[in-house]
Image (cartoon, rainbow, N blue to C red; front, top):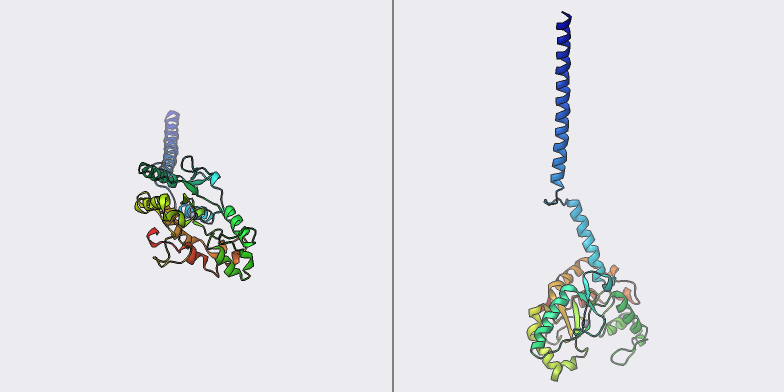
Length: 282
Ligand SMILES: [Zn+2]
């Protein structure tokens, strides 16, 4: 009788233990399943980016683009930029990597036809442009026509006069790392002899490498902004996107930090100058 009771007791205990172990096991399995599910959700194989993360990334890339478009950075410290080497330039010039590699292709093609293309200016940041602009604004530097901008008392007219020769800081395409000046800064150089040959070659071929003359002849094309610059070529695969983004991201409040900046809006620096380019270069 005692043995029977004892056996029954053991049976009950064993049954209870089996249930407990089974629950425990199920619980462990379900924990593992959860971990596995989580791992597969965060697997490096899957696209796990959330909408919130996407929004943060877009905001970050817009913030970086605003810095680049307004020139408030140092190209020598930016990994997207590279130092131009000899024989492509004799000066310390930085360009975006893709721009420089396309220039080298164009340089080599031109060389085969006896045309020499030398970069005489590339990326100029906000601080370079501020220095040029303010020296002209204060009359410390005489303008190319021999006059002093300081003698013009109306600040809007003074800014417009300087804009005949120099960009306003934060509105220059030279901030972007996509634009280069080639061989000479005078249109007259490109109108005869060697300069004319170089210019004709560029007009004929530069487009094949992505480059476009943004400041075209205003007599031929109805556009606002800078006078014709036969030396200034822009790498369109990147610069066309930057032109669009400039309108989207840069307001007049972001054009600041230099003498005369408050007049940028009154003279329409964005619509007339940043957007005043050759329609073929959009
Ligand atoms: Zn230029």
